[in-house]
Image (cartoon, rainbow, N blue to C red; front, side):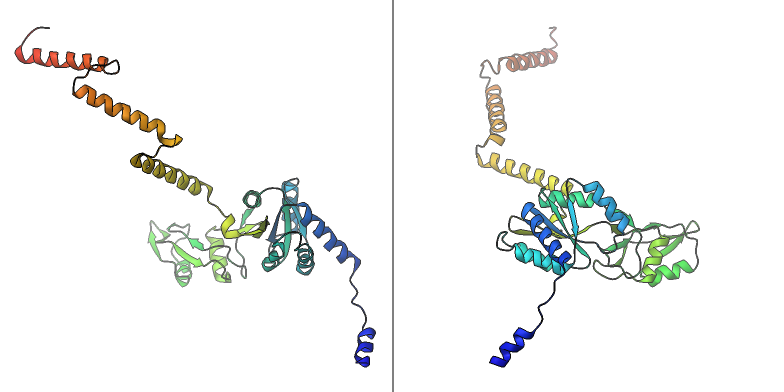
Length: 296
């Protein structure tokens, strides 16, 4: 026992560089200061592009690049103060960075997406989504290109002296590695499937983690779905006779029109029907006069 203690005492203490301590301290302070924190992947992002993005997002989003281990230490250090923030460690991948903002996760994601630019695919890159070669004409004349496209499962036919792609074809599925052949064909077709920018992996706010799939909201579709749902709900409320402010005006109007129609049909004269009754009486009188050949 004594020998074991002496051995432990003899072990040199791990030396942690001061700059690493400073980085962790700075990250902890930022994590405390900002309500919204995201993990982004910087893979394939040129330094010049990162600099441009920093400048464009300055004042709205703060970007801090650090090693995954140091980010993990900072997240652990704050896990008691901010519930669940340490779960962001599960999303540290590739060349990562943290982004800090006072905006909510959806606004933050949208800001970052706006500052992406298209780029051609390179062999070895991972497809960010399904890469599709669309049906339609190409600039190529018949030749070896037909075989090259066919090797990728792309069906073609010759029309007007040009090679036409017959139907859409997924050449690389999301998450798969892009081969050299595919990259070359995509380049020749002018297809740029890659996006250069910050790749959002997950965002933390108020104890919740929002993954990329949740944040990537199609705003137009969402708005259309909301409008459709609202109209269906209004229709159901009217059918059920359920009075709420969104339908009460329409329901009163419909009831009024129905009562008015019944009154007109029964020739019941009241202030609301007198004008229509006089018009209807005049119309019937003219019709009768026409039938018996009276002059009116």
